Image (cartoon, rainbow, N blue to C red; front, side, top):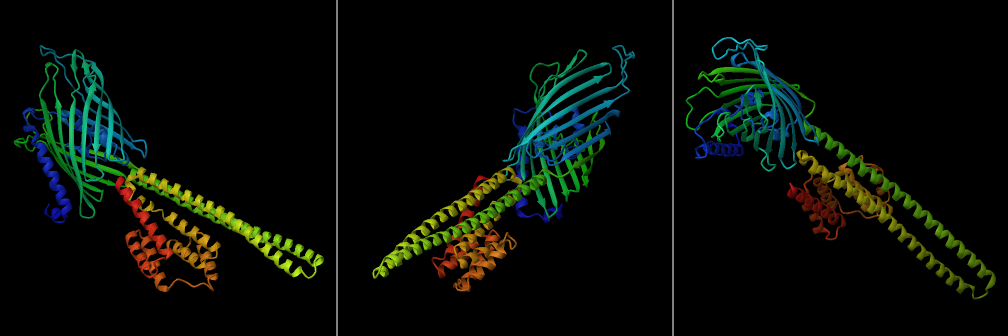
Length: 597
């Protein structure tokens, strides 16, 4: 213990102190006058077979998660299960009785968690006597009591899980049998802001039919549970989970119609796991805040081992199963198996698939823009050439007429006609260029809208897969959108003959992804067209690319600071101004995301 707490950082230490304070506050509740002085007996008979992880932790499991047996303990916490898992348990215990249990849990990405379970107790060799002590002959000499459970839980993105468990119960004693039904409700809350803390609430047997054997009727006893738990790491690979559970019920026996006293039980448990392979557990159950005279009764310890999906659990409890005042050591062994990947892993894979679709969609939209822009540019050059030819042909025809029809005045007429046709040609070319520019702007706006639509899909992804928010928050910066934006800008500048600025845009893209579309080809084209163009100074370009590298690393504030250095040299530098605006927009989006968490 000294070694463990010697490595504990202050943040973990304060979490532990807070948890211990809450724990001691809770155990003082029974001193309030509304509580009875009686303790014990809250759990029903099925708790003996309700999961070895829980039993090893003293039954402190209302606020825990990640186990198939939560179908019994808290269906709200069951909604947080990560794996499809099946577990079995069976042992010989109380007075030659056999306990058995089996659970299967099936969490899904979108539809919540569905679980199925069965628990029971069986014993044989029962001898029956009448009121005179004479043996009674019966067709059956055994006792069987079991439950079938079907549970559903749903986890909300903001940390709340709600669930319900429907139960069908059958009891057979000698020649008598009876069937009943009931249901449980549960809630579990792990705040996103303090993920190391959780609270669970459950009500077992909210309403039930009870079971009638012959003339004897046994009513369901409603049990109210509340638990708190904490989960924090010690070291790099060790995680300690502490759980405290406070259970209570109103009890009415079959012979007294008046309301009974509020009985209560306490449970406290701890689990120390090593790399999710080996776990050590300990717990204490059924104690009063004022006395520990019944020790070791109530103490429990457990071990767990999991590798390659297979799990083995072992639990030892000190109990008084026959209520004779004698503590017995009960040992239990169970096995389990987890199928496939966890829900978080599946969400991450699903998120990556959607991210890839988004990237491919933006890239495809950029390629289509490139094709349409080149097609539009070619069409413009062709129409411009045809327009010039048409005006030149008409001018030639007019000049030939002047040569034939006029004498000394023809020089002046030729000059006037030439000026007139040049003005008309210039006007026609300007109208053509204006139409070309409008069509180009429409293409650009279409690409912007498509990028925006994909960015909105990323935001939806952020909400859907909250567990991957760190990864998705980076993706919300839309690396593909950034590359697409600069690539498209470079295409426009290259088409307009602005080779210097086009080169900067393409080199910006290349720093992100040197193999992006045709960026290498366009870099060479831009360099080829810059033979007579003055470049930015080496000092400005060095600062600019340093800012781009910071932007690539998501260090937007540092990138802005670098680009502002350019403005001190060249206050109207378009590269710096545009990229500063881009970085500031990304920061605003990040702040908005953080505010919505």
